[in-house]
Image 1 (cartoon, rainbow, N blue to C red):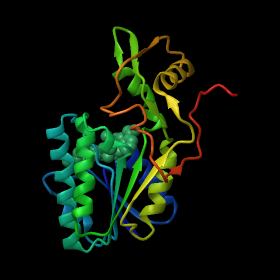
Image 2: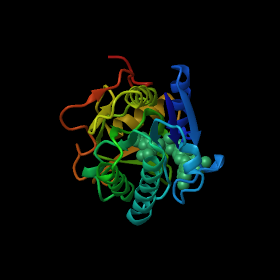
Image 3: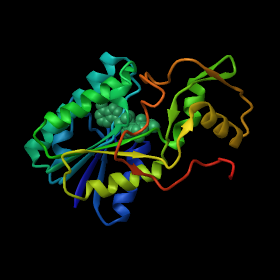
Amino acid sequence: MRLFVAGGQGLVGGRLVERLRAAGHEAAAGSRRTGVDALTGAGLGAALAGVDVVVDVLDTPDMTTEAATAFFRGTTTRLLAAEQSTGVRHHVLLSVVGADRALANGYHAGKVAQEDAVRDGDVPFSIVRATRFHEVVPLLADLLTVEGVVHAPRTRVQPVALDDVVDLLARVAVGPPTGDTTDLAGPEVFDLDDLLRTALTASGDPRPVRTVGGQAFGAESADALLPLGDHLTGARPFPGRPAG
Ligand SMILES: NC(=O)c1ccc[n+]([C@@H]2O[C@H](COP(=O)([O-])OP(=O)(O)OC[C@H]3O[C@@H](n4cnc5c(N)ncnc54)[C@H](OP(=O)(O)O)[C@@H]3O)[C@@H](O)[C@H]2O)c1
């Protein structure tokens, strides 16, 4: 099977391309550094010639609703148009669990607009939503740090290992389009402050964590970022958690 991973040089994309190739598939990676710009459409037609499946793991650092929506809706619209003209038969999107319950965060608003563009499009699709990755927890601590103290709102999270996300994406990409959304979360639910303390302790980082009011990442309630109802659970526990 021939697959094209849009954003295939990124954190998720790089590992996904390796996983697909190891399974014997022909997987190409495309991003601006390989001459494929999904926002302008440059290089997309040539990159998608003969491709069966596109997996979209593009990302942007833009966090305002306007900029994130322009990026996610814009790149998806370009990709789907190129897929239709080249005969791609399955579009797979990676999105974020709970984005639709955390719209005060502009990035999440962009992901919801992206999901809508995929559902409204004409290419058969599968949407995989994952919770925050284990691997980005140290970055979250940095984002929440003010004057050397990590400020953790009372939000609950269920982080998942990147490898579990890649396993699921690889499986979905080579299967038939689901026409639906599949949520994936890790095996444990944490209060965000506990998770950050666990991660900082495991890495020998002395920053204290202070629990504060409000919710993280634009969540509308403490449980908004947890999967609701049916979901898949990753096998890998959060590293560094004390036994017991
Ligand atoms: N981090 C989390 O906890 C989490 C949780 C759930 C879902 N996700 C989703 O996971 C996805 C992938 O995230 P990631 O961390 O792997 O991102 P990443 O490491 O920042 O990679 C993003 C990729 O997109 C490419 N890109 C950006 N703009 C582009 C453009 N205009 N045209 C073509 N390529 C472009 C980048 O390459 P160039 O710079 O070379 O273009 C890069 O390969 C995102 O959609 C995110 O919403 C993340």
